[in-house]
Image 1 (cartoon, rainbow, N blue to C red):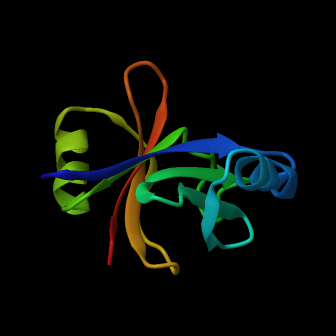
Image 2: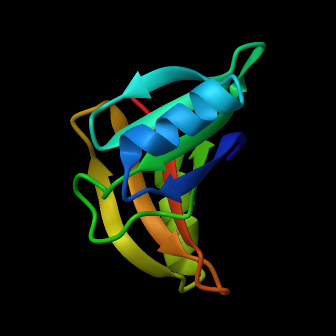
Length: 116
């Protein structure tokens, strides 16, 4: 399994104001906007991203970070094998990702995903 990308997730009560801060103040550009989550990236490097979310669309909590891997099924199997708490089950989401949430030993909720 290979890690492709790591993205911090910011929970925002005011999604628009938070998006505007990153776009207008820091020069990020919007690369995805699903209404409940907005992802911004650095204009010169699309891999430098931050996701801003109000509440997760299908999960019971919002993740603290997202880790994109090349094989989410293998990551899920490994997390189960090691006894890590699965916060949100392995799910094919309508916006084109397969993902699950896992809690790391410090309590951080990690969204582990692959694009379909």
